[in-house]
Image 1 (cartoon, rainbow, N blue to C red):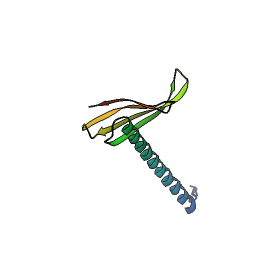
Image 2: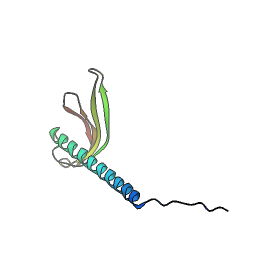
Image 3: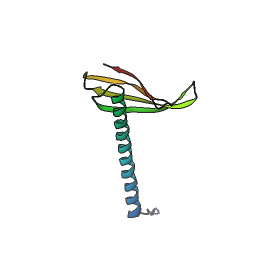
Image 4: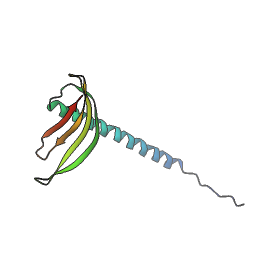
Length: 106
């Protein structure tokens, strides 16, 4: 039987791979936190001043059929501390730079 030679990966490449993974993970955590903080500020302008545990599930780019412009639709969940209720719904950022909401609290 012939012996198959296996070449080791150089240590510098292993270090580079680990650094890339750590930077990617840090970027994901940072961007998620910034998006949640941004929407917490938006919720404050929409009438939900005292919120916590804001979680953004999805961000969609949708097109307004009337003017053919892109708008951003956020699907989110949060806890309103004033009423002590769990709220979930949608926040729409339109082409006029205005926010609108469709949020249900239970």
